[in-house]
Every structure is written in structure tokens, then in C-alpha cells.
Image 1 (cartoon, helix red, strand yellow):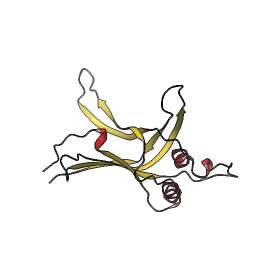
Image 2 (cartoon, helix red, strand yellow):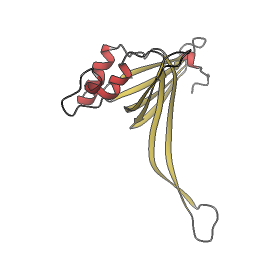
Image 3 (cartoon, rainbow, N blue to C red):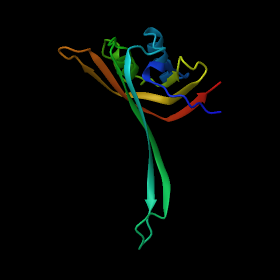
Length: 166
């Protein structure tokens, strides 16, 4: 039976998982150094999946006769109120380590797991896993009278979802 419970951000946990290989190893180094399981102080996560639908219009018809699926693009953002260099290093790898790299460097790749479980209904959970994530943007905000925030944007290769209920 599918899970029918609702969740809030209070029910969520964000973690980084890596696969073996040069890009995964670069992400693992950062995740281990900064203990990114779970990612702490996150205040907002968005994941967007866009599937390009191409309508086919016949001559003389106003409505499309067929919709053909096109490319699927996955992107998102994470905001965090704890600036320690972890997300910047997760984006740049060696390029964000404090000294300028001599040449080319590996761009870390990881899987982002977004798990929600309502404490009032234990055993009922939903997990969205974004696979092959690469961070492609980082920003830092230092307002006069509010929390210092960093934000990253990302792109991913594919996405999966799973729910569990008891």
C-alpha cells in the first residue's frame, strides 16, 4: 500500500552518497571531511524535473494530434545557514581547497538523498534520490541583520522516488 502521509521540512533529512570513480572519490573526500551525512543547517531544497513535451500539430487542426516526450532535465537548489566551505568544495573539488590548482581538476559527483519520515507515523517514509548531481552555482549572502546564507544550484542525471508504509 502506498504511503499517504504528508510531510513538512521538519520531517526531512538530506544526505550525500557517492559512487566509486574519480568524481565520486572527490565527493567522498569532501563528504567525509565535513560530515555531510546529513547535510546540516539546510533551510530549503528544491528539485525540479522538466520533461520537454513536443506537440505535433496537423495542418488544419488547432489541437495537437500527439505529444512526444523529449529531453528530461533535472535541476535544483539548496540553501544553507552554515558556511564552512563544504558546498563550495563539493562544487569545485580541489579547485576550492584554498590554493589555486595547477591545472585541470575533477568535478565531484554525488547522489543527493532527500528522506522524509513523520515522527508521528514511524515506518512511513518517502525518499527522493537525485542521481549524478553536480553543483553548478554557489552564492553567499551576508545581510546586515539576518542569518548568513549560502546557496547552491545543481544539475543531475536522473531521479528516483520510493515510499514505504507499515
